[in-house]
Image 1 (cartoon, rainbow, N blue to C red):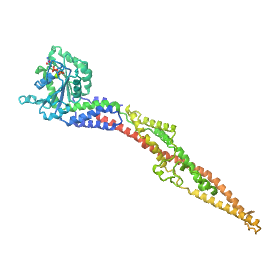
Image 2: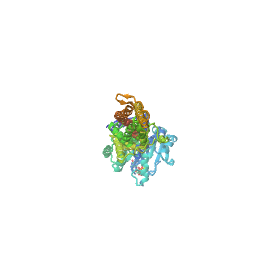
Image 3: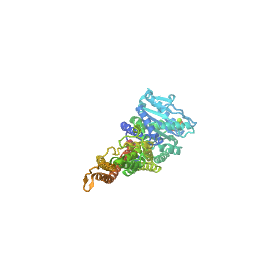
Image 4: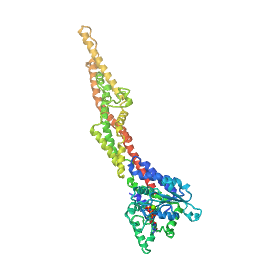
Length: 561
Ligand SMILES: Nc1nc2c(ncn2[C@@H]2O[C@H](COP(=O)(O)OP(=O)(O)OP(=O)(O)O)[C@@H](O)[C@H]2O)c(=O)[nH]1
Ligand SMILES: [Mg+2]
């Protein structure tokens, strides 16, 4: 399984330019990802992605000509002093009482108008916004045109509101200048809570060791080396590290030219957002991974599901009834005519289940609308077998997917469980069991039975008439002879024997045909029931698997720098 984060890291280059269109495409991929997983993954895990999409959309829609740079650091490190030194004006009060700066101050190089909406979004109060554009020194400052410098409160503040303000702004600004001083540069708070967290934004990160003048010149390289080592451990090995002295213009040259480069490149906003997308992708990687799901559950699990559905739908019961109905109906047509009527009085096995009777209709025409059969409800065992089969389908379909997905697949597989009984009932009721038409051979046999019965009745009548005439002393009938036996006797006995013989010969044929009917009914019902399983169990599962594939592809696109 290739790790997306790994690929992001590989693709990462500190000085790589970020193409705005490529960034927009990545953001679009994050949006597609969010759409694909909507309702499938826990909302809480998706907050950072939603935030980045929303924030990036707004930032890119606002001024791209401005670069928002924040001075962040511990109290007393000299943020406000650097801010004032860069502005060459005393804009943000510098004090001895700590913390001094409680609200963010902003200085805009160039006209304020273009920056106003950006500052509104960032949330700097109008009375703390300053403009650095003086006719006197306009030329000196042109290199910084487009810069919006923010002097942040202290992030290690005793004031909780300061920390919250800093955390909020660090999520919005384009570039951060971390200000440390010789005393506190190794503080754990700055490294553990802030710098380390910023490792994905190292191409918009700059670290300055301020108050360099407080160190003996020989000490400075040693402190810088030590700081560099700490930055390496924070994952910020390649970020620029400068020494500054806020109280001496000469000590500001390095920082000023670094900011001039940043402003000239106009890349900071794009790089920051690209870093945000990297962070989001890395956070989502575990949720989605890169497993390629099967197109659906395997054949074995589907076959087991279909068997369980057939059991729950009463397919064996209906197939059995179809076999008995065939025998019953054949009997009413091919049986000995004198007992047919009695047979007809017995209920048709299929009609007892409220399935189509001999004429293909139902007892009550209204029933066909609701298609409710009287097939017995599934037993507890059948229900639990169905539950297990659905679970197995979900498990097999979700095999190999990252943790959050199997639950989503199982939920999808069970999502229409409540509708399943009615759907199965409708499927059974709507299946043509192949019993609508009476086979021609039934009628032929029925006609033969009538013929031989009529012969027997004629023979009987003839004999009775002969006896009656003889009893009354009237002249006897002249019975024609068939060999040695009188014709009426031949008709009576022959008719009866022939009837029995036809019945005896027909019975095994009917049994054989009834078994075929049963098998055919079983096949057709199984197909109908499997279609219900496809619609009500497999289709929702496939939707989740398709969403997974879309999410995975979208995340892969979002990871592409
Ligand atoms: N010697 C020397 N002192 C400095 C330097 N930078 C700042 N200071 C002093 O350090 C103290 C704190 O400076 P600030 O600029 O208020 O520090 P801050 O980071 O803004 O502090 P908070 O607003 O409380 O977060 C002040 O007394 C400054 O004069 C520097 O480069 N060299
Ligand atoms: Mg300050």
